[in-house]
Length: 128
Image 1 (cartoon, rainbow, N blue to C red):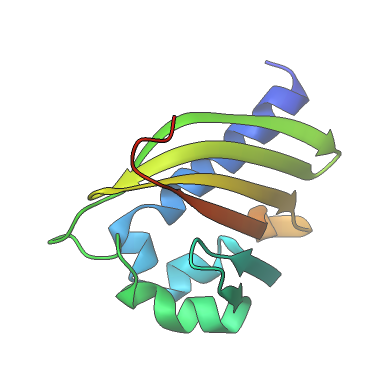
Image 2: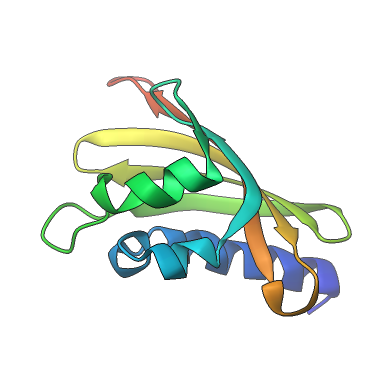
C-alpha cells in the first residue's frame, strides 16, 4: 500500500469514528478527531466551529445508542497534498439522506489526522 492510500484510509477511519455514537457523545474523543480550526457548514446551512460543535455534538442526531445511527456509503478520498485528504460520501440517518465532503489534515506529532472542514447537503426525496 502506498502512502497516499494509507493517508486516505486513515482519514476514512477518522470519519467513521466520528459517526460512532460513543465518539459523538464524548467531548474528549470527538476533540481528538476535530482540528482546532474546524469549520462545518451543515445541511441546514448553519456554520459550526470547533468549540460549538464539541459542545453540541452529544445532542445531535446519531449521537445516541438508542436512536438511529449513520449508515455511510460510497466513501472515497483523494490526497490533495501531503497531509491533506478530501473525502466524499453519503449517509442515511433515519429517513434523511445526506451528501458529505470533508477535508482532513494531518497534525504534528501525536495529533494524527483531524477533520478540518466538513460540508453536508441534504438530498431531497426522489433525487438520485
